[in-house]
Amino acid sequence: MNIGYARVSTNSQDLQLQRELLCQAGCTRVFEEKISGAKKDRPELLRMMDHLREGDVLIVSRLDRLARSTIDLLAIADQLNGIGAGLKSLAEPWLDTTSPAGQMILTIFSGIAQFERSLIVERTRAGREAAQRKGVKFGPKPSLSKDQIEHAERLVAEGKPIAQIASLLRVHRATLYRSLNRAAPNSG
Image (cartoon, rainbow, N blue to C red; front, side, top):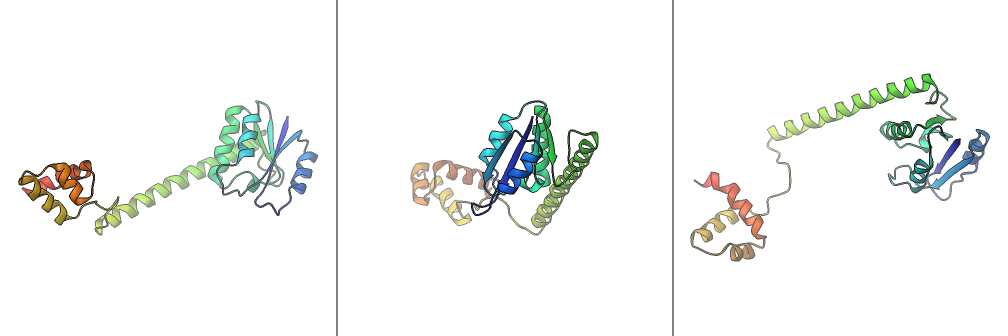
């Protein structure tokens, strides 16, 4: 069974042209929504994916109506493959996963997307290492300053209860314990 998916980004746009194209392509049902493609949560897309069965073919007028990016397209195509459903785009005839050529093109896209992901991971790692060499600290700002930790250490040495010291410094006891434990190797 051919199932269509039509989407426009705003309420002021019209789905009529997509609807007509999908009906001409033999779609027996068309799922429609007016929502930005940038939104990850698209209710009609989710309903359609749940509706699809093995042997069905999802047809879209153009790929940008279905996917936000190549990675998004590949994720959707992988879901369809898991169901045993195909994917066709009317404006991009090269994308027809019901044919061997279309499957090959999607496989090539998948390899390119994986390569792109690995490049991003490598660039991110290299940038982080360079920043660390320059002294940039990552993670949340410490709750207590060096002076506050030293003050807390003096109060602990005087026998003050941890709960009282934590209240004085306006932090949780666990935060105070962590700060004191981190400072311990440096203090002795």
